[in-house]
Length: 146
Length: 79
Image (cartoon, rainbow over all chains, first blue to last red; front, side, top):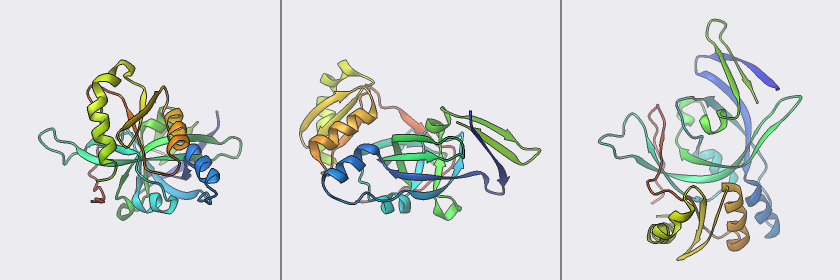
């Protein structure tokens, strides 16, 4: 299983990866003779506390994707059991490795504002469920196998 | 609100859709296009049926699953 070993910086376990439109959307764009937006480089925080992956609005804007629905989300600031409602989008995600590349062709993600935190995505458990994550705090390293 | 008609249609049709709970419904305007086992299959049919026009893909659930994020986030408002 290929794995990436990276440093844990002040912002936590951060991973650079690629995000694009979903495969079905790319096919629809091609059929409509509309250019498929190129993949966008994204800086994401590996976040085991996120049940689903999220992208900053700027990334979704670059890809020109449109909402495919809404999801309900609880955060520490949601009170009295009333969740936030966030827009959901379809994207593809690529984790790169010199020996093997892992692609999610159609992943439902939600939109949030993250860029002020120095990241553009939260890599949630919907992706991590297909990976092996090792967090070595003493060495300030983390490894992600996929 | 984006997909307002589609969300209303899904809500109205949910009792009928629950026989396929756990699958994904594709909704276009006031019509349920169909239900599909995977999100990718639902998307593919949605784009085939609707092209680049807006459509809804919704996991069929009697009680909608709430997602959890352990940090505070702000959510852009498009209304």
